[in-house]
Amino acid sequence: MARKPIVVGNWKMNKTIAETKAFVAAVDDKLNDKADWGIATPYLDLPAAKEAKHLIVAAEDMHFKDSGAYTGAVSAAMLKEIGVDWTILGHSERRQYFGETDETVNLKMLQALKNGINPIVCVGESEAQYDAGETHDVVKTQVVAAYKDVAKEDVEKTVIAYEPIWAIGTGKTATNEIAQDVCGYIRSVVAELYGQETADKVRIQYGGSVKPNTIKELLAQPDIDGALVGGASLKEDSYLAMVAAL
Ligand code: PEP
Image (cartoon, rainbow, N blue to C red):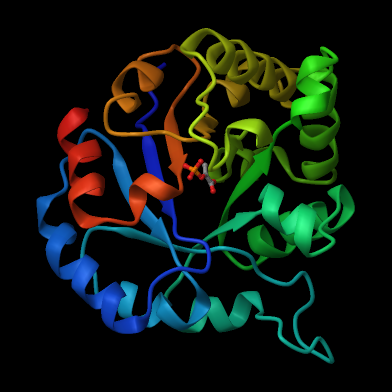
């Protein structure tokens, strides 16, 4: 079945509000309908990003509680209030530097869906796990944990980003074959959990040093329905080169 690709730039801790406005002004009118195009920005940049008419705007994380004594955290209701209805969850940098676990990713998935926010949930293995041939086991564990108690009818609102940690920000892209193998495997895990019909509706992105010259071939793979892009999403010209490449 046809799944519309979704390409989202993950800005991480980059860009000020002024830089966000300049990006939106340069990019928003030049998108095409070959994909759903988006950016995930730091919280402070989100209102400026929401001035875009076409770009999907995502947070990079959110908390799993409604409100309370969680200094520094941002809730689903706060995102919804400014019109943000997408968020990345479980990025490997959140797992590595901020103590994110499979359990908190799952709580955030449930909280996002309860509040009408579409999660882009990240999974992926480390270089050591890749070398040890553990990739399938690692991503299966992460996917099964992330979707615990997620209702079948909510699954198609979610996006899964397969991001091998060894390919993030390193310039090492997984080959098209590796990326397809793992994304296809992830779809089979979703099929085990929810059935093939539901699995066929879920969009699965690849992320890890995607560039304008690699995006088209990656997205041509049967189980790769988009990309989560760090470095190459930051500059207006390189983002637009990805748009032109599809
Ligand atoms: C990311 O941060 O999700 C990512 C894939 O980064 P990069 O494209 O820079 O590897």
